[in-house]
Length: 331
Image (cartoon, rainbow, N blue to C red):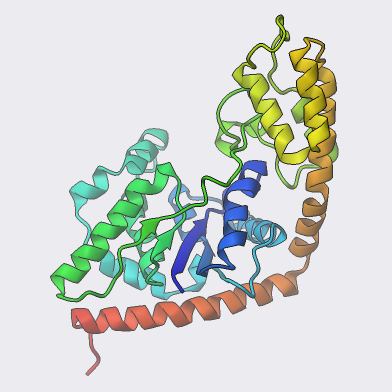
């Protein structure tokens, strides 16, 4: 069975886009592959989060992914910092990375422009740590979006460089992987683009949002003055509302509002109210489950301890092999 590795940044709550994207991906993959899913708390340190905020974010993300269907019994679900083999292999892989290629990373350039007062070494070597997250379990597949393809290419380069320098065909070269043709792409409420935290709180409906919050967000969604011709093409903002409705509403509801649009009788206020209620009905059982899991400290402790044990079993074997290959042997 092929091995898949994927990380989750503890940077905030999951929204509907995450649910229909990464979370659904993970749930399907856990039945088809040997999966290692981790919360990347080391990665988040490049922005110097407050300690209490970091811990709470790790806990929340863990609870949310479990509530979405990620099964700790089927996968290896762990926290990055619980596996000490990762930073040691990160140190060793830094010897394989060159300053020039790291500086060419688009993510590094982006971070430098966004946080000019915090250009730390972790930002520069971010691709190395990401590579280690993958190769430490000798993964062959990595679910990544377009924005991470360069990092995956760098991972392949580091793996090939290690194999070449030490004359070993040890690390596989992982490939990008996603069920992109079958996933729903969830747009934001701002009329354009995808749903995401970086676009602002009002752009996204989070799984943890209370009903009143969802209603307020949806009612503020961007619309236009309405159609003026029968069967005219929907502008992007209106198409987005219908796409959101397709993810949470009944087919007959969508058909009714589509007919109203084509007949020029649609009332956007009614559409938004219906969409909000359908979103509430969809997210309420998930939100309740998130709250229950997050409140169960003993269960979460059991999950992370089990995950750390399984992750370390895999990581320690890789690190032992690497140390021997490069000549770091005990007398």
